[in-house]
Image 1 (cartoon, helix red, strand yellow):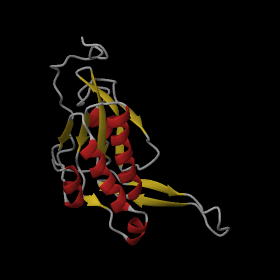
Image 2 (tube, one colour; image 1 turned 180 degrees about the horizontal axis):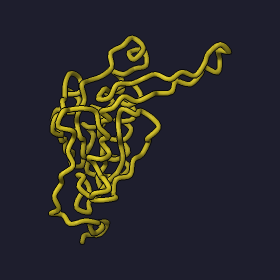
Image 3 (cartoon, rainbow, N blue to C red; image 1 turned 90 degrees about the horizontal axis):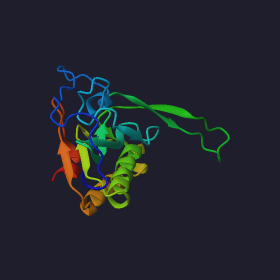
Length: 186
């Protein structure tokens, strides 16, 4: 083994049989990445999610593939809840919970994606695996005000500067449309 690499926890030639549901219904992408059966894409037990409470329509973390550390960015396909804190300057303001559809980049998840890419590339020098399954960016007035396009552009900037290998995998039954295609298109 080369310095810095660890022996894989499972055989490199093991079958990867974890798949999204055949009917295209929402699923937990973490089960596709790494699951208890050891049939996920990455080495068994190696995926560690980071920034889980923020930008919940994106799942980011680190994993090993054949013992090689990778940065991982994937898509939450299920609807999630985003907590919008109360405005401390407004006594009438209240915390609210907003649903966010899966497979969509919202301002928080686009920012999370760009930040994770920056961390994996500049700080850690990890190869990057993107499991792409986005329908695009949110386009509501509030999301535009919250700079969704700025953070989308930041994803492109970070990928442009990335000097380690970048792999884009489109899982079965996945889709890549609109601005999402533009962002991850090689």
